Image (cartoon, rainbow, N blue to C red; front, side):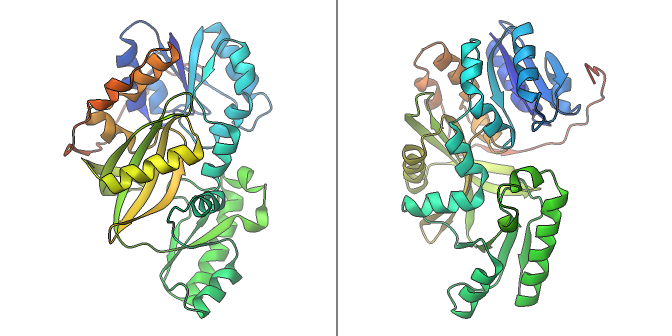
Length: 340
C-alpha cells in the first residue's frame, strides 16, 4: 500500500516511521504547500495548493489516483476539517482517509469548543473566557487571578500566546493577539467568528503531561500513553519520559469515549494536587508522539493492520515505562526539489 502524509511540514520522523512499517512493500508520499524537510525524506513528494484553495481536494484526489495511494493521513490541524468533509468522496475512490468526523475536528481545532466539550463531560479544564469583559468581571469577583494566558481561539503551536500579569497587560496583549490573528494563517478559521477569535485562560501551575489517546478506526477506545513533559520548545514537546499514571489513563479513556475520535488524539494536560486538567486536544499525530514510539508504541503499524481488518491491539502493549527522550535538530540539504 502507498501512503500519503499531507501537510507533512517538518515531521520527517513520521515519514520514517511509515517507511519502516511498509518495509519496501509500498511508498510513503508526502505533500505540503511549500517544500519542507519531510518531503525531502519521503519516497515521493508533491507541492499542493493551499488548504483553503478550491482545488485542494481535487488535487489530492487526482494525485492519489495517479500514484495508487491507499491511505491518507494529515499532520496539520487546519487540514483535518477539509479532509473530514471530503472523506466520503475519497472512500468512493477506494482511498482510506484516517481523519475523525468533522464535528470532532471542530471541537479540537476550536479552543472555545474544546472548553465547552470538557465542561459538558465533567472534565477539568482551566477557566476560559471568550470576551475580555468576561475575564475582567471574573477578576473583580476574584473567580480568577493573574497571571492569565491570552491566545488565539484557533491557534496552534506557540503562535501569539502571551501571559498577562496585570490588568494593563491583559488589555494590551488581548488587542495584540486579536491583531496578530488577522495577520496570520489562522485568519481563515477565525472568519467563523472574527469578533471572538481570542480566548483568555486561567494560568495553570503544575506538572504538564502529554497523552496519546488511541481509538481504533471504529471509534472504540484502545489505550492511553502517558508522557511527563520534561522540555518544551515553540509550543511543542521537546523532551518527555513515559509514565504509568492511572488517573491520566482514566482521563484519556473518558475523553475517548465521549469524543469518538479515530486513531490518535494528542492531548495536553496538567496534574495539580492529583487532579487532572485538560488543556488542549489535537485529533492527529502530535509533536509528542515520537516519545510514545520510542517507548515501543507503533501506531503507524497498527493503523495499517486496522485498514486490513486485522486486530493489531497487541502491538500497542509493547510500551515501556520510564523511557526518556529528547528531540534533536538535524540540518538537511535540499536535493530533491520535486515539483517545487
